[in-house]
Length: 456
Image (cartoon, rainbow, N blue to C red; front, side):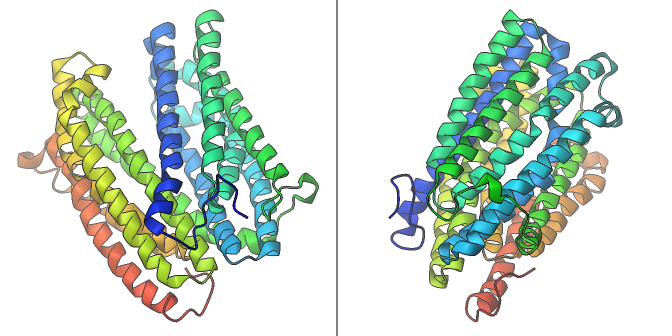
């Protein structure tokens, strides 16, 4: 019997159930953005500009280091959903225990890398000398909580796979509130600066991990976690890595390509950088809202694939695309409509607001294209294809973007911020077209004549 927070993905209205599934995911992502913004506001207001720069200088590095391991949680989500939909309890149990132990190993590896390599990595990224020592302190303390972060990511991926997006939302909300309170206490009262912000983050991540683990240990279904049974199943590990590693590698390369894009923006000076940063923060809320339907598409597709409800997969793709188009068009254009006011929250400078508006006009107006592309990738990953969408995304969204910067942007007549930002909608359009053709080919071969469980 389904609990009140679970959704039966394999029967009933796809449109209604996908929306119910995606809303908590959307709220979780937006809450995370708000809590991250609170970190920046607290450290910026009470610890000074250098402390703010120290925290900000770590963002891209943290994303780069964690993307591969977070990608593995996608493999956990797909595999868990397929076994759950197919009612394969033994396989489901092995997947859960393999995944949770893998999350611990992943966190330990990241902690060692983050602590031991903090200074070297930040120097390689050319962190300003005046903030380097503070940035090293922040990174080392932040990565002390990395095992908890991985445990939460893998645990919530398991819950999402079995229709539950509500409890991870409540756990994130509780941990986020603790994070804000500890930020204020450590930074304002204890005067700990960046160390206080990092410690608050690590502690709140540990709280969220504890809540997820406790939830899984209390489950009575096939996803119940028994600590004494934690062990790695080689078969399940291989399948998780086969699905998740391409997604993680794709995220890592995207981070590298964004560094190149950021370098192009940096060439226009501090005002352009400030405007770009402010606009990118605003876009983050639109992206996270669309990303909820990407995650919903993965979970719904995986479960129905495991249950052999192949006809529903086409309905799931259609529903995901419909929702992501509506979300991207409505929220993107709202962000554009109120762009000046929203950018004014970040800066009172007219020049910065003008520079940010250039980005919003191009990215937000066309952001639905990114959502369409992601949902197609989610559908492909849901039926076990992860390498193919990775290659298409890397060549289309990353390779072509870098080629654009190296060629078109290099021409004197096109050397402008507008040209930099145009690389996004152009590469989204090309990439989503190839993904659509790929899905048609794959679905005809895999869904019409099912011959194997997992594909490359």
